[in-house]
Amino acid sequence: MKKLKPKEVANKIDHAWTYCYCLCVDNNELSKTRVPAIEIAKKYMQAQLETGIPYMFYWYTVNRFSNLNFKFFISGA
Image 1 (tube, one colour):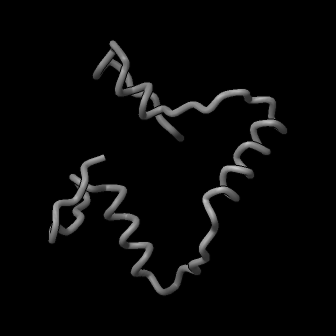
Image 2: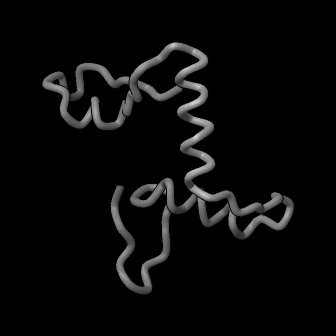
Image 3: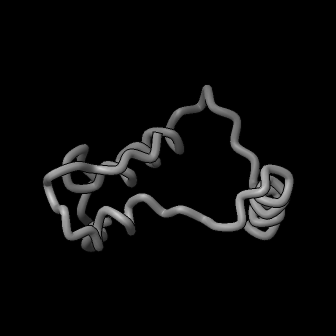
């Protein structure tokens, strides 16, 4: 993920995640609740135990380190 420089505005192409995040923050129709990161980690670990999946699969890391660049792309969806 490309980091924003000081006074740089997020755009759809270079900063897709940041751009979408800013749209959500600025949208008053969305409810906003702070959740401690530890609570998210607990839910994630609980789901792993319940489903029997003993690992976390980071598809963006797999794609970055793949020898098969541009031949196929593992999607997160």
